[in-house]
Length: 127
Image (cartoon, rainbow, N blue to C red; front, side, top):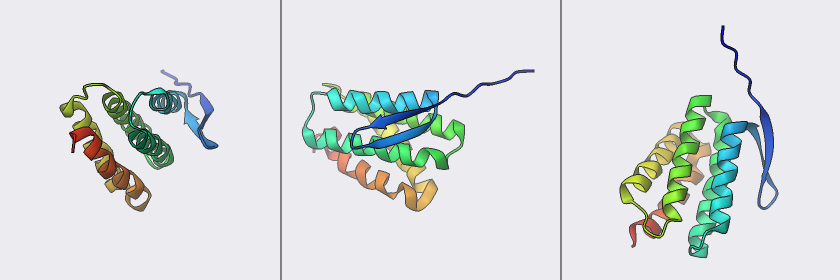
């Protein structure tokens, strides 16, 4: 018989936002937030990525554990590509599309993610 231990932790993300949850998911969200905060990118893009991270944090409780892990992985890939000097379109595009798909699936609570994703797109596509 296999048993699984889940450790819950609390993480504070700028502006007093706090996240409670699964260690892996929580740590990944915190890492994405910290990468964006320290990135040498346009302030507008930085603000959008930080807000996207906060919105992903909000939807996690509405997802299954596996869906939550996938959303966080998509956020990590998108963040890594967005702060890269040479973002790879195939990577950020898939991640952004998956985040939007999940946001659409969960309904009203996902709308801010859709709006932020649409505002991030011009930065990444060079428009």
